[in-house]
Image (tube, rainbow, N blue to C red):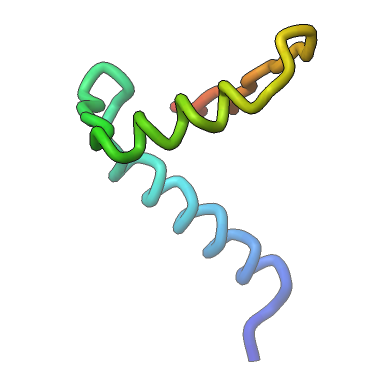
Length: 63
């Protein structure tokens, strides 16, 4: 049977390997479809003008 500490170490190593396998932010390239852009415009148009909307994205962690 695996110990708690061994499982924790394996999970940490897996998480690090997954993070390191992702492209760096400067390598990100994505083009949203026209349909998506249209839907977002409709969604944003439905928000009252006096409503404050804050978009928060998590910071990537690179060790």
